[in-house]
Length: 325
Length: 252
Image (cartoon, each protein chain N blue to C red):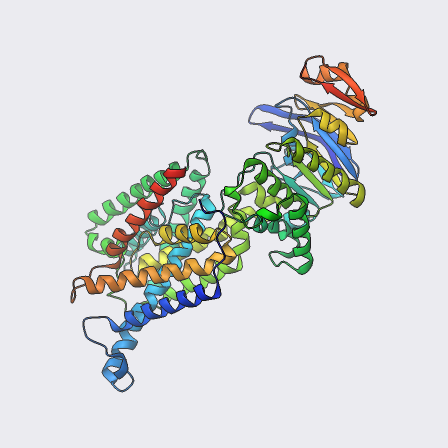
């Protein structure tokens, strides 16, 4: 077991930042119509492509990745369990059910109204999950993610049934499987709210670290436990709802990234939050680029690529933990 | 002063505490003793506002614990619970540093750093300060938690069985540290102890509880008598006086 891990140096930070920048530029360049980056400034058509499609798509991937990784980190903190994330514990499914219902009842509602309803549904669904998770015996850490998977499955089944009855199954699959190909200028800007949520998480970072020590330690240190729980829930729900409504859910980002960062750097959120956000952004960008290249010129949705990559990481985490239990 | 007036507490229908009243003046070490299930931990957690009061009043330095904002109380009173488990991967020094949270809300000043370093050194954790808590032994982890409570640097320190997992050397060292902060800095320490001889050697006052009530309250010399210990723990034990302090030979 690793006893002491040196804190990330300035160099590690620079290299990571450079890596993220390379992915960002690659994401701008890769696509069905070629975009030679050296000609962008002189070619108005290329400029148009960049501004309308490639740049929004890349920003959306960065925002979704960073946001969902932070949402996962916060959910793991609030439930004091490393194996939960919005996609596997009912948050995403509740958001999907919410947007499905608002689409059925008020089909003409604006995107932000739908996002708001999805966010509200995600908040309710996640609150119920956490309230139940806190009652499960802490000696059995796998009960919480198992319960989350069953719980999310039940809500997802309700959504599927409702969508089937209303002949909206195609819509549902848009929300359940993340995809960036439809992201255009004017259709993704709400996602910047996810960046705002990450900023809120940064402000309360120390409190989040203390929350992970448990209710009694938090109260002993003067933290308003119930209030922090609410703030955390709002961050998780808003980010998840935004992702579901605008690009569709991307699984495993919220699970894999915080766990890997925790392994390497520990759980002091003030120190790790930036790494988790950057890691999530990089992972989603990389998966999206891979999805665009694997069957070029066709695309594989990022949710599918991430399902394969993240699933493998999840299994690795589970078996690793079992090894020294 | 900690003032506890007519406090009763029930868990569902089971009474845990019945009409407890107790004044603990500022300064000194008070040991809470009694058999398992006497209500010692519950009383401590009520004083530390970890559970809502059901009946009665508790105040610390005049601040009612149920209505005073939690962050204000955290500057006056620190608690270390029994069996605290840390699932987070935090380094020892980071954990101890969070003891300063009530004072700076996360910003560590130079003064905070000095206090944290002192607490780390006081419990022999300097060599371990960059280690993750989960890699430590039970006793080392317990010392880190005690150091965190010390770093909170409050006038009142509540400790629930802090000697758990500590070997003889560190158990004695902790009791002596508590004695010295009480004597030198005028701190008030309330400590739940199972080892009544530690209580006799280091506490000014012993409060004995049984079945949710206080059944004895006095100096070690008054509490450590064969008759009194029989009432509290339910069997007779020999009591010998060594260097003027009574010690119970409860192993015989």
